[in-house]
Length: 238
Image (spheres, rainbow, N blue to C red):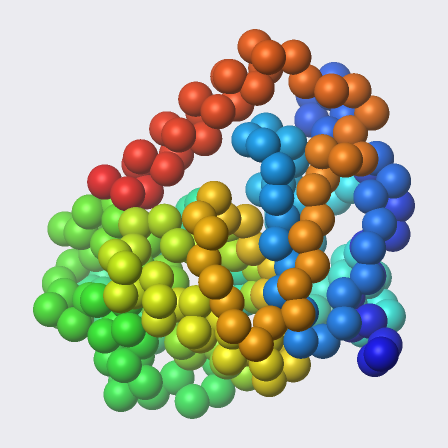
């Protein structure tokens, strides 16, 4: 077994007056697909945001290559590709301009126009390359964001929130193949998804934040969380 590249130690996360989870710990070796699973409202997206440094835990720490991510800062973020619910797409730029500018901001190697065109083809946006992003549907804007992954193969850590939402069957298969290849090459992919998407060649780890919850949610709380999650999915898929 190789040494872990990513370690989570004793995470406690609070939202309002509620503790989502406490004492959550795990270690991830290179070449691992980490699926964050569980019911809506259990803290899956919150855990992803903690992994990127966008949120801070009430207790505990996250280490990348043995260094706390908040201390590593830019060194860690250069090795991270995060795609959350917000797509980060600028309405006044064309589709390809969005992809290229995001690639430059992330200092991605090999982010040429030809590579960007290949990435857009992979997500089914070849016919929208020069279209202003403001004219796209929410589903198409999601695909613009996901195109970044095809340019991020040199980035070892991918953190993805519902990456398969709004993709057709062919695009889902292509993305699953890309994730499988990234993991096979020693990368780490951490994702939340409600879809059962087979990813070949992947060492799989499943983390359920709800197992570390100090108090179980009531049926009413679960129903409200489910309704909120469905509203987000409908917006992304429209």
